[in-house]
View 1 (cartoon, rainbow, N blue to C red):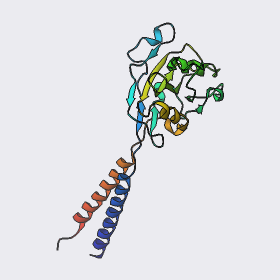
View 2: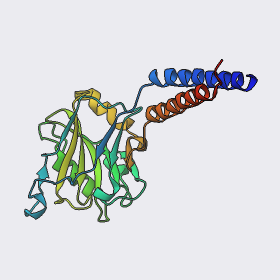
View 3: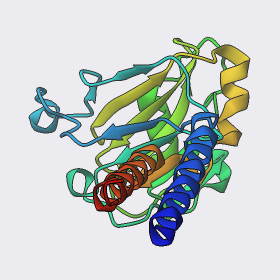
Length: 224
């Protein structure tokens, strides 16, 4: 009976601990992972059409992007990436000639004329003027016509005629708030991998284990 009592107390303690853990998890702000795992040019003829093509057929519209917790997750096999991404957030003058996989371009104008649209092709050309090695990559820029920030995949950051695929449009914030958000992007917002199981799922597995222990202890208890 003493052993049974100890088992009951242990299970009760574990259950209480699990309840506390689940409560803590439920109060956390869960990060959003925007996963890209399909061919960025799927359904288009961009790669076989002469000249630069800008494909927006797979663009995702995001109502918001929390820079403190959210991330863009790129399937390494789909985009031919390594396990980590080299990140640069700068005005065009600070873009290195080589090595950057992800570039957040803080420039919002390339000719001093606000009336001239600053679009994906314009931003890509600005970047190509600074990068001197051939490699595919991603960049975020502010589209002056839509007045929002967009995520773009380029088949070659060094080529001013490289094909582009618009991956995402962050619809909020807009205007000056969107421009001011550009310097706040960090390398933590860009991941080359497949997301791991969430903490909540692991907690659920732990709770299931506690319940199993309880059931076994009841079955092992002798009848009165």
